[in-house]
Length: 180
Image (cartoon, rainbow, N blue to C red):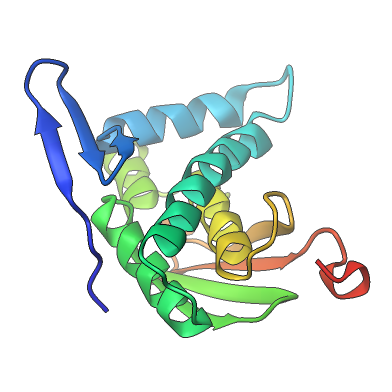
């Protein structure tokens, strides 16, 4: 599936947009340093905060894309979300499975992990908090659930030496019981 992205660049404001959504382009330095800051923060759960900020941003983008382009089938939504991850420069994401209560994605390339490795080398803990936020946004948007309906955990990580990263998402609010 191809994405319908009407990208523009305003030379006056130096703003990039895709459709009506303003985009911020990033580099591996920014993503790695932001992740390191979240890892080092002891005042609050900054890793969770970083994931939630990513979820908030990508949920809006994905939900609006589905609505504005009349993408209604689960398979088409998943395909669009996989492509959007790449188009944003975050890497290569493949949904291994997705259901209303749980899902699993595989990152064969990860901008965050690869940037981290370039800066500091391998690490003993997963660092893709942004990717986890993207996955919870993907799940909620695909299944028309509100934000924070899912939690995500990076079970396997490129930064830890694995060939691919695996992120699993699970129902955080008991969707089946509540009938969201």
